[in-house]
Image (cartoon, rainbow, N blue to C red):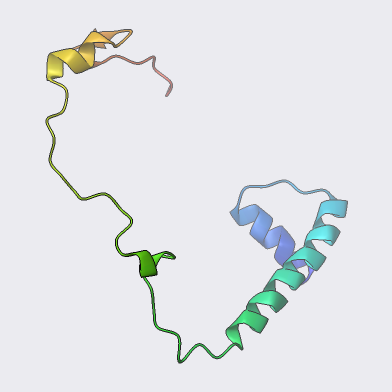
Length: 94
């Protein structure tokens, strides 16, 4: 990892970095990549995949049950402004 790569990543993320931040990030990202490589070297072939960290406890999510929601009128009743049957919000795109 070098400063040119850091600048490229910053450009993709639309970030502006100082020279000090670039230098610091070189070391930090090198450490992260090294740690991921270390994790990649661990043999997990005998580890069974899990869908949830608490899989031993069964399904920890609530059942998907259909419930009646708000009526259209009730939903708009609490709105600060409504127009044309929907919520009215200030324009933010010019």
